[in-house]
Length: 324
Image 1 (cartoon, rainbow, N blue to C red):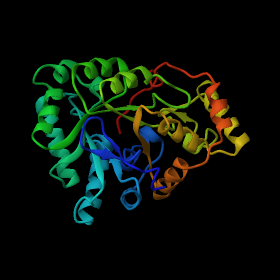
Image 2: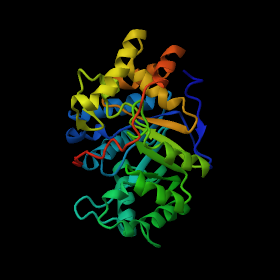
Image 3: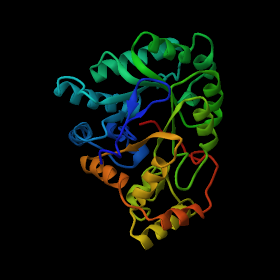
Image 4: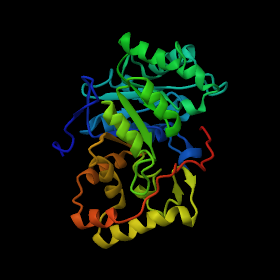
């Protein structure tokens, strides 16, 4: 396990991170997104399990669960007397969720709200989040806008590294081209069944930007199984959407390989990916993730998977976004 969790340099920065990062959005209790609820005690126990484990890297955001994710994480930090040594924390600047304004002043307020909730005076990694949902994208990208404010925050020492975290690649790629980010988060768009983000990942690597690949389980279906979790990328899934997943499940059953292990290692073994962000919603999922990261998968399985067709379309194009 120790060798598997050897840290890697984040882009061109001095920050080093493990190859697994734990996403904490579901710990903010987001039933519209995930289809289930997570109470405070369970969330805090999960955070403690991450802190106690070998992959001490967590990703959150101001708008996850209307602030509950950051608040619960911050409660644990306060109970521990501060952020423990070795823990790397990533959060995000978010638009105003009512007005959708996302100018520089809103970006500044977002960070202030985050630091208050987390009980910290700085974070390791700070991302600009979901610019595609801003009221006016120009507020984000214009000179003196939210992106410029993000880089100003790094200059002020409020974070060690800055990133871009969003969904739509047609929005992300121009922004990635125009600024020298340290990291990039893509989610649901580089999985066993979808490679939509691959060209953007190539661009990031060419620019020396670290790729953080989130949601390798395609919203949970590879972790929980299509029979138990008929959802795909945060949507109720029909048979056509689940067909590629079930095809992979058949191969996994033949070789007695957990689909979750295959999905996780598919991301981890790609040389473009610095760290894979896995959402967890209960303490036992933390250890399960670590076990899947080291599960011995036969070469024959990778060969069979390599023969399967995959989609390059945006898997969330049909998603009806409902912020929790």
